[in-house]
Image 1 (cartoon, rainbow, N blue to C red):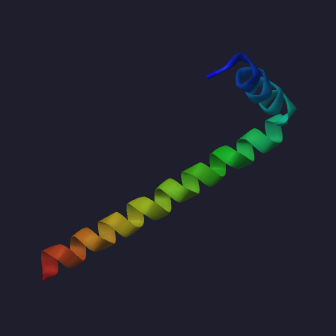
Image 2 (cartoon, rainbow, N blue to C red):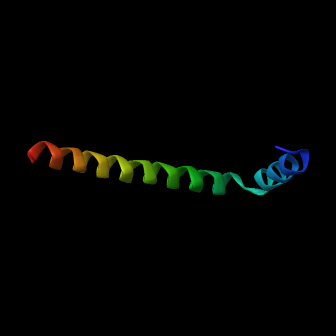
Image 3 (cartoon, rainbow, N blue to C red):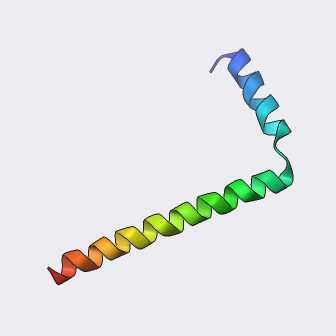
Length: 49
């Protein structure tokens, strides 16, 4: 990664508030939970068939 891109990433990250970071982490947890549910559901269907 170039120095310019690295600087831009640091600027963007510094502009994100703590509350926004928590919201993003919660969103990631929700996405993981949904993905896990779908995979489990598909595995159950595969076992039944």
